[in-house]
Length: 78
Image (cartoon, rainbow, N blue to C red; front, side):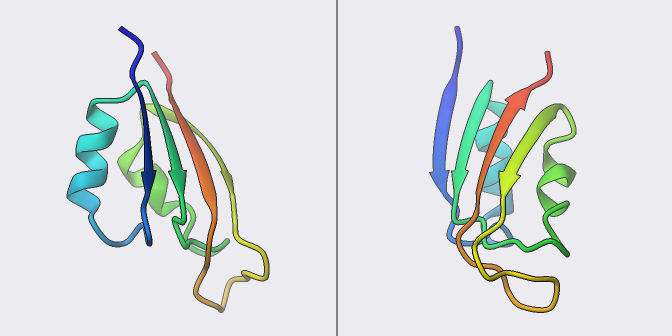
């Protein structure tokens, strides 16, 4: 069975145990509002080493400002 999940994270640093459980049950995971910027986008990879990660960072985010918005698509590697 092919499993797709979506989640409006409202900040990737919150609910990390829930994020891991979503990934465990997903082949594709669509994320919105991860609130990460260029400086900390790699945070998603720490939970998803067996996923391909495609992401966008919110407009007007840089390395020194808290991120806003942002989307990501995680696709299981195998």
